[in-house]
Amino acid sequence: MKNLNYLCEINHEHIRYLDVRWYNNSGIILLFDTITKEYKSYISGEAVNSGNSEYKDILKIAAHGSTFPIEAAQILFGFDMYEDLTLSQSMYFV
Image 1 (cartoon, rainbow, N blue to C red):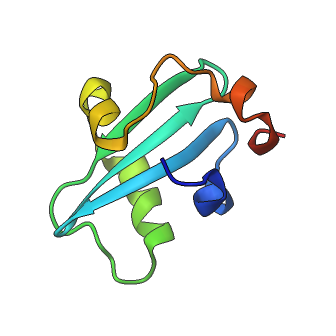
Image 2: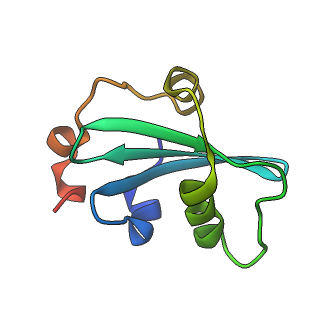
């Protein structure tokens, strides 16, 4: 998993953006909900890239993407889905 500072400028309220993977013109994002303590993952359709910025593309996936199975995301992103990031990496959740 990337350093959480990578996407911290696009964190929104209680949702923390952790990582993104790009495959051709599709993206898969990994999020962490600090209220429910759950990881969430979404996938875009084809051609999500707007060309403006990765920031806008990630926000578009979060808002309009399809749910991506968290078990598959666990393998793809290599994270422990039972880890509470608000405890283990509290410096990013101030």
